[in-house]
Length: 110
Length: 121
Image 1 (cartoon, rainbow over the protein chains, first blue to last red):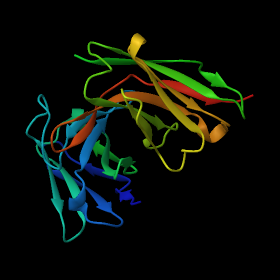
Image 2: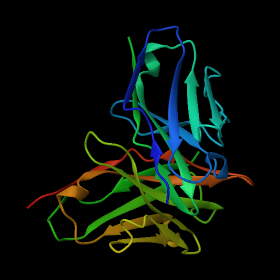
Image 3: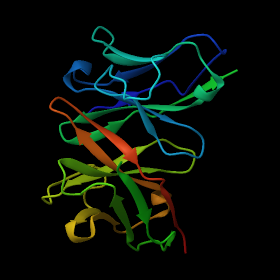
C-alpha cells in the first residue's frame, strides 16, 4: 500500500498561479493514474483532473495536471486564480483495486 | 445524466451497524461502472471505503474490510453499505459515487450529495 501526501494549505492572490503537490510514498507515481477532486465548502467533490492531466468537459483550461517521476509526485496547477477556486483539493489514485486519497489541500485565494 | 442519492439513519448507536442505501437514477446500475462509497469525518479528508460491480464483485479498504459489506440490488437500481461494530470514529459524511472507467483509467464521478451519520448513544 502507498500513501499520498499533500500540503495542508496553500494561498495565493487572484490572477496568480498556484501549484498543489501530491507525493506518493512508495512505488512509482507513473504506475497508476492520478485524479484531482475539488470540494467547495458544503458541497460534494467534483473532478477537475483525471488520468494525470485530462480535464473533464466543463473544467476550464486554467486547471492542469502533471506528474514528475523524479520527485515521485503529481501536481495540480491552477492559473489565473479566481475567488471561486477557493476550495479543498484532493489527489487520488488506485493501489491495485483499492482507492487512495491524499489528505487534501485547502486553497485560499486572497 | 447519472445522479446518486444516499439514504439511511442519521444516528447509529456504538457497536451497532451503519446501513446506507444509494439510489441511482438517470442510468443503469448494470452499466460498465463500479459503484463506490467514500466517507469524510467532520473537518477531515476523504477516505475510500470500497466499491462494487453489478456482478457483485467487490473491493474494500483493507483497514475497514473486516467490518464492511457492500451489496447491489439491480431490481431497485441501488447499492448499499453496511459497516458493523461502529464507534465514534465512524462518524462522517458518507458519499456514494460512480467510478467510471475508460479503456485506460477510472475516476470517481459523479458523487451523491452525502449524508451525515453520527455514532452516539
